[in-house]
Length: 119
Ligand code: 5GP
Ligand code: ZN
Picture (cartoon, rainbow, N blue to C red):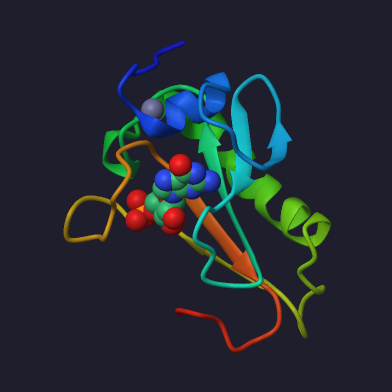
């Protein structure tokens, strides 16, 4: 698996930086955001180092499909209320103009009662 020894999210996957884990399997890791914008706010990432959505290719279809399919399940597990009263937001910042700060692909999954800190 591709990893980057300087990448903060690769270090989280490896356990070298502690995190509050939400989910883990062979290919995917999820953990609570350290600065949550919403009552529920976790990040869903591939274990492999992929810098951003801009690096996604045909070989990543299954991985991205699994990440998107996991999001609603984990959102409910972490306390988001069911659709339609509850729900959640998925955000994937990509590149400098997309507001991306950590260069390891991640989906923000946010939800819970409003108001939120941001968004
Ligand atoms: P971006 O702006 O790249 O889309 O979002 C990066 C997110 O990663 C931010 O919401 C930030 O709070 C979160 N983050 C950055 N460093 C850490 C960390 O060491 N641990 C955790 N749990 N979240 C982090
Ligand atoms: Zn990484």
